[in-house]
Length: 201
Length: 169
Image 1 (cartoon, rainbow over the protein chains, first blue to last red):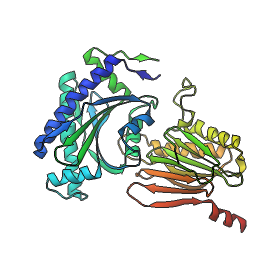
Image 2 (spheres, rainbow over the protein chains, first blue to last red):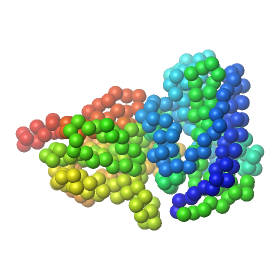
Image 3 (tube, each protein chain N blue to C red):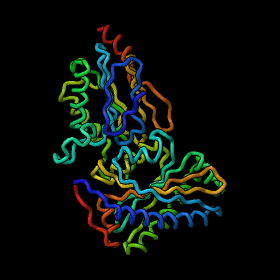
């Protein structure tokens, strides 16, 4: 059975994503000493192919920092960073890109953003949420997003993606910040807000 | 140029047309070629088998167990003959150690099993590993090219060279 979401549930998820990515943006700003622009998060409840297309061109080279969630909710947090963005972030942190240290710095950014996002979600929902150590991969956008989504959800008819764009002021650096919960994870996020009922079609 | 997205099938006999499956991770790109009739097809397969029969036709092409027969049947409708088909596979990577199931390997196995059931031989395959791939099939020339993430484009299958080696037999 494929879960569907009501407008009210999608609004609630958007609000959760908004606060979580706001928190993440603040941490990133402190880490880099730069202002961070934050877009209004998009809540995408789409078939998998459309959800991937909404994240960007499937064969674009991209750096993905993947933070698996532990605790009450299953899923992953993903940062998608363009090659220019990865270069800019490394430069701001004073490390060389495309080196072990550069990759470790990007993982650390993932760690900080993931943790602050989860802290925000935890305090809003009362759930126990912890990040696992981040994985870093340089690969094609479609390969990263589709494989992660498939590992999270049994259904390819409807995938839920919470997507915020973070922009580092004065740098050609935009980071896509995605939360991909499992099907059960979505219900667990909504339950503490009193919106747990999903209408199954 | 036709992009074949996840869960889609494209069949063409239009010389020079390019069919592309972009950003294959654990998904499989399955190319079928009938040189004699000039028909070629590409499926972008997502999962090994349909989750439940209660999914009547939501994306027949998504699941290996249904996509393989569906692609073959669409090829036949376009004039191809099953016993002449050459199959080429790419994808099925294990991108992350995150999930415990290796969907990529299961996808590759399910596609190969489906082809074997229909008596179609796999002429070339580039599956497994942990990198994403983009697969391109040119109709008419019947070349299959694969580009791995961060790597060069390589020719995985070239019907012309395969043809000549067959002719020598």
